[in-house]
Length: 366
Ligand code: TXA
Ligand code: MG
Image (cartoon, rainbow, N blue to C red; front, side):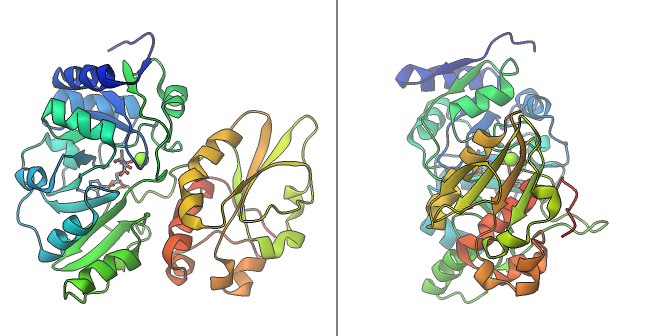
């Protein structure tokens, strides 16, 4: 399908328009509380194929299906472990995706050949209105081209997908601002495939309150050659279009020389947390809140803001350096799985996303 221009709409008419288009098998960008999604009728093979085409997404990476309620989630899934019922009751509607056995009710491409399906009940009122009007399960990955930063405003979607889709429903900035936590199950044990604002600790506590003591395990990245438990664990993901490196505040005076020279006519982009920090060069500095829950919500927006031709390189502070060995901090090392495992709560979530943002760029030797 060739589309000349992409329309951005808001208000009550926009949800109705979106529902009509979705019922006709079209793709529509929709707001959710985490990030904007690129939705299509999950039961429509052509609609689902269009999502993969618009995003340039590998067919091996499955999509999350969004439904209005736990009852609707039951309709497209097989048997649930008890843990899944507890987590659904605790966190839905909200930023939690659960990987459950598929009942085979959606287009096979949604599950990318797996026997499971990722399901989420979103909380955003506009997304819920669209689901209520369309009365179909909606497959929706984040509304960005594969590998780009997830969009948290309608304008971010427009910048990435203008001309590729017909409609973006504008529901305001996404309140949470990073993608949902993705959790699967090994019998009753939760396996975290993608950390998110519902942290490992939150999941553990909800299960304990219900009498289940089964510490969640986290899979940080797929090992080469091994079967990929969640295909979205690709290392390059959520990445700005220009060189991006991570630094620890404690080691600012040990920046590698390559970071110190800003080319003539260019500017350096910096994202840091808490108090602004003095940089050893001229820079556009965006300071995110010290409270990492709030910081996470603004991280992608900050990356979008700095991802422009004027900026030669983006340096992003890694929070949580107090939880890591000094050796790692001093080397400005990229976070590896063993470092992520040492972090807790939101510091782990941010390190996961930042590691993926920085991963395409060759490591600068210190
Ligand atoms: O917050 C979110 O989850 C947003 C909004 C739009 O809901 N969606 C989103 O979708 O981030 P996407 O496609 O960008 O990420 C989906 C993640 C991928 O890592 C994918 O591999 C994983 O969920 N996933 C989906 N279905 C799965 C399945 N059956 N088994 C394992 N992983 C699955
Ligand atoms: Mg995505």
